[in-house]
Image 1 (cartoon, rainbow, N blue to C red):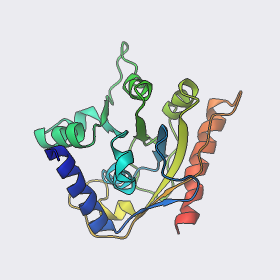
Image 2 (cartoon, rainbow, N blue to C red):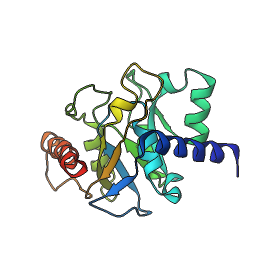
Image 3 (cartoon, rainbow, N blue to C red):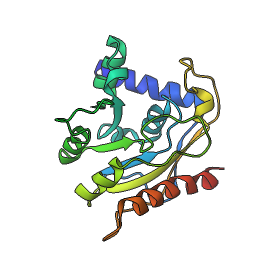
Image 4 (cartoon, rainbow, N blue to C red):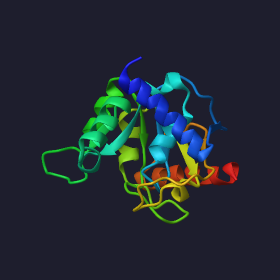
Length: 206
C-alpha cells in the first residue's frame, strides 16, 4: 500500500469516527459508472465526507474539485489534495484566455467521476444558494454522465466556515436518483430543477 493510499484510509476512518456518517443510497446504488455528484456546500469537510461515504473501489475514480489558490497554499494541503484525493484544481479568478470548466471537462473526457458544489462557495444557511452555470454546461457537454444529486446533512456543525478543527457531530450523506438535462431545457430551468433535487433529499435524510 502506498503512502497516499494509507493516508486516504486514515482520513476516511477519521471522517467516519468524527461524524458517524455513511452514505445512504436512495435513488441509485453505489456503482462503477461515470458520475457527477453535485451537493450542497457548507464546509471544507464536505468533499471528504462524500469521498468517505463512497465504497472504496469508487473513490479511486471519483475526484473532488478544489480551489487552486486555497488547496495549494501549503505543501501539506497540496500533497493531500493531489496525492490522496487526486483533486481537480480550478481557479477562482477568471482570465480572458482560460475556461474555468476545462479542467473538469478534461477529467470527464478521461473517464473520471467528479464531486462538485454548484453553489460555487460555501454557504452558512440551511438552504443552498442558487446554482451557478457550470453544472448546466457539463450536462450539455457530457450527456452520458449520470448527474447524482447529493445532500450533506449537518456537516456545517462539524467544521463551520472559518473553523479548522472538526467537532464530533452526527452527519449523513444522501445520494438521490440520477437526473439529466432534458431536451431543449434552458439553463435556468435545469439549474432550478437540479437544486430542487438536492434540497428534496433533506427530508429523506431527516
